[in-house]
Image 1 (cartoon, helix red, strand yellow):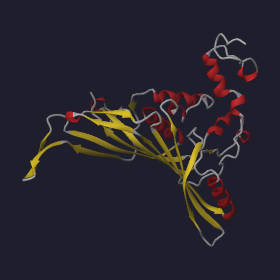
Image 2 (image 1 turned 90 degrees about the horizontal axis):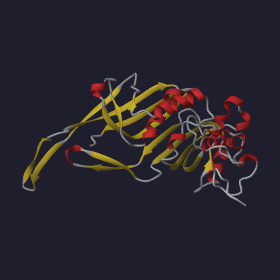
Image 3 (image 1 turned 180 degrees about the vertical axis):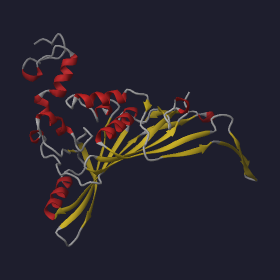
Image 4 (image 1 turned 45 degrees about the vertical axis):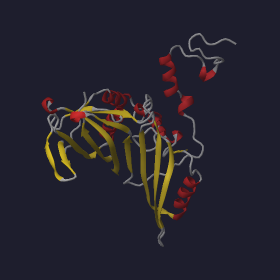
Length: 307
């Protein structure tokens, strides 16, 4: 048996795994080929949450502070993104509530697939949606971190679940919102968004700005403290960016941009002018499903002064 001269792998000789003509062709086949796309999960969690479901993304980085207000960030690890979904299931029949709880309790301490729509139930041009957990996340492996159940004497009951995923890495983060099998126009928009170094979205309703002052403090145990103005970089800005309401496309572009940075700095100008553009970081994003194709996203960003 000889190694394939192109790929270097041994024993890949037939069928879907036949040696591709190039690495680019290999990636295309894997991501869009019918053999991969048409597989079925074994016992996925396929219950559809109620409106009001929320998702939070946190970027875990080490913040290093230097003199004169300068700072630097470094990732806490390869998997520095924490994803958490808070999923309400309201006004459900008691039998469905029992099925939901039984499913997650069966997987306590272990991950399971979360897939709200099956491949075979979709039209040919929408097959890519089978890879969603809930839009716009192409992320399907979760663990259930907790259950809150509301018992009632009526016919319908409520339960809230918390799903978590800590497996998103620096290598996989750019594929959470874009895969080649989705519509080309939307895919191209997302890929173009994550290549930008400037966050160009400005909230339509309001923009909450906070100024933080840096001061020098002196004193001793026998005297009151004295505060004086720093020599340079004496003020930094933070913004609470709320986008509400927005549609699925705009929400996806915002989330994809922030995910691509994963806590590293980017440029932002609150009024869109070049003169007010500064460096910022985003450590936290929260997103909620309001209604059919109506969403909200909140991004908390802070100015960073780097060398």
